[in-house]
Length: 318
Image (cartoon, rainbow, N blue to C red; front, side, top):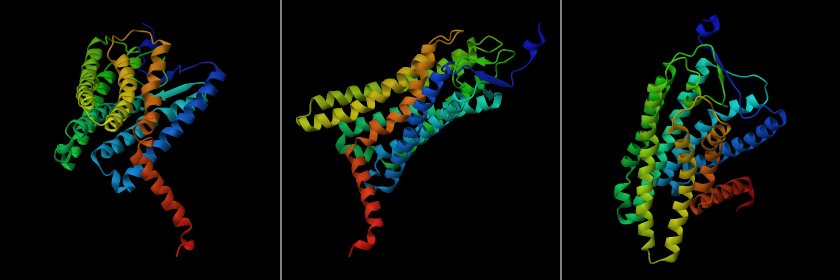
């Protein structure tokens, strides 16, 4: 055997989203705008929920955690991708790749669980409004949130362990734009069947189980909404739940496509495009869909703007 095949990999090289220089400059601009919107939108949501006491409710408590997860999720991937758009050789160290996978899976899987928790919160609010305050207590909300982060940590630990217990020798070129288990397994120097089955099992736990819970919640919500006498109440309920379902379809749909199917030896361009949906697009959409078009958040934003305005012109007031 060649000496190269006996050498353990110490760094990986990404092929990225495109090899064309003009396309990379265009993508750099697009990704930079999306990342700035993601950071500003999610930070604004966290700030508003923290400052406005009217938003100290279970729904916004979960939303604050979702915004924090989105910030970490996007930041674990996009800044590195932006740098790689500007350089010819796109490199990440072996341990840098491991760290990226740990963080990416931790916050990504936590987000999967949080979206399911938020659908349950909406189910209780719409279907059992009179019991909402007794069911969704502060203690219950805290336990659900801790459980979401714990499940994310568990899946991240299992997937990262089974991925990096495999030997990586010789081949170090990843046909992707960031470190992700399905793309990395294509470079393994050993049989990956056991690892793929372990990742699939974790996918059932963190992707399919939450999706089933979400579908059950919304089936009950829709059944309840249809029976409402008030047209205005029906419209409000559909508006709230409809926005949630948009995120669910984008996030879970792309995630299931990537993690819940057989892993081929070659990465197709469409696979990388689908990854963009849950790594780049969804974290930007969450603050817009969940909050910035919500009248409670708009009211909190207006209140914050007025406070800023009057604090600057305080000397004009009597």
